[in-house]
Length: 319
Image (cartoon, rainbow, N blue to C red; front, side, top):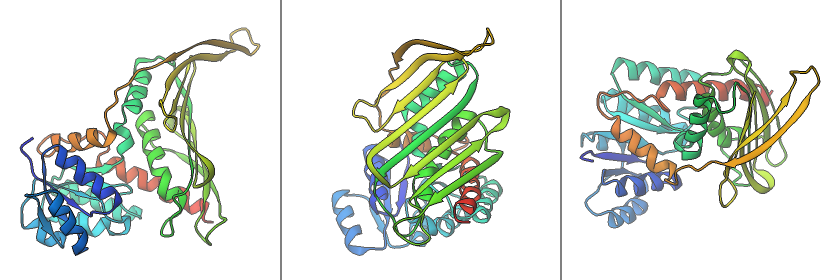
């Protein structure tokens, strides 16, 4: 891949960007304000240019930029990159307000920018397989879906559990339903830090009657990442927190043809899916959409809709 990418931010997730892009042989620049961190990375990745600011990095004219800084800094950094007419990927959430997200969408359109948001689980092979099963009609009509994203920690002080964990699931629901919620009902509970909910439950209603709920908590005795999709003819489950990460197609339903609810309990099929890392696939997709081809998956409009759902639900959670 004969492209040059610069990573902005070398914190925990930024280092994953750096590692992945280096393996893809496109890492050419790193922006990091901490001099010691930057020096370590430049020694680890020889030939890569180091920058202390986005303004300095923009002078190098890289083909694309990825932003992996704290969410509160995303807007200003993304705006600077877009004003330089460069393509970019912004980590989730793209911004912390609807107004800032909308401004970035408009700026990307004005300057003809290919912009993505880092909803990495949309590139998970299991999620892509679920999308394939839905398109093929394997479970009939989509009726309901839910996600549990639970663990003990990592508790944050700068954001609540909903903003920390739920963007993944909001993005997945949006991807699987090809829709945005028309109705939201969200509640939360606070135990550890005043004004920062530790557990939230969000109910969503989409077009054509599809419903879903998202349960997230960082105050839970064990890790559980579970996605369940219910159709009129069958059901799907994905257990991402289990070691073997099983994706299953359940030939189960409730039949009402006779007027009396009848349980149809058919076989359970283990569905194979690819084992490539979602971040690798996401970065490849970003690189392949650096020129004229506009990204369809996790593009900036998708990111805007996720922020809108986050803000709308948060207003209820914090009220």
